Image 1 (spheres, rainbow, N blue to C red):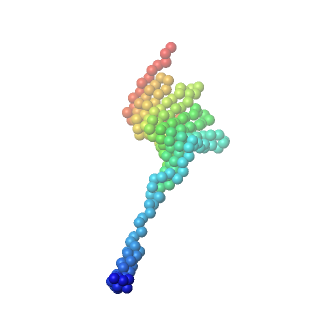
Image 2 (cartoon, rainbow, N blue to C red):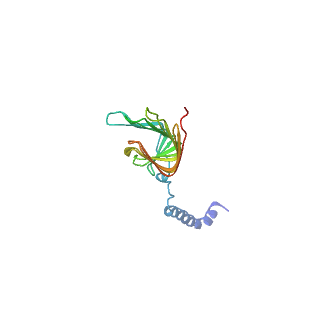
Image 3 (cartoon, helix red, strand yellow):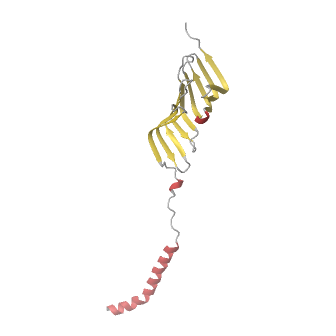
Amino acid sequence: MNFSSRARYWLPLLPLFGLLGATYWLNQQVLPVPDKPDSSKRHDPDAIVENFSATKLNEQGAPSFIMAAKKMLHYPDDDSTTLEVPRITIFSAEHPAIHAIAKRGTISSKGDEIFLHDDVEVLREASAKQDELALQTGYLHIIPDQNLTNTDQPVTITDAHTTVHATGMEMDSKTRTLKLLSRVNSEYVPAKQ
């Protein structure tokens, strides 16, 4: 069998191969394009700052509020900001400084509220009129521009002679008033003479 006789057997199949090729090409053209992953739906940080610190000044130019953290991460999908080991200090010309620390924290999308979580500790420095005061809780909500701090969680407050347990607390850092909301239990130990 020579080449011309072989070609005679294959020649009728050429249109069929052409039709198969055209069908494959058309099928590829009408298949939907696979969706590309939408990175805006992922919860990945777009900014990471280590050893972060920010200071707010009062009208006289002195520090009134300092917020620092081991690490700050901002997430664009929900405009949230998280903090690792946040530390906050509130200064006042008339009163001792107040310090707060926690394992983690978040900042509202507008930046006007701070939420501290896990092993929150607050320390009011001693003054000539007051002993040092320590507060421990699992959660603390701070609104710096309104000088307000609150929690609905159990709190333990201690100073040199008193230990107070309560559930829920509201504090005004400007007037230095503290309101305990419920289940208040206090123990006083007089000073030894």
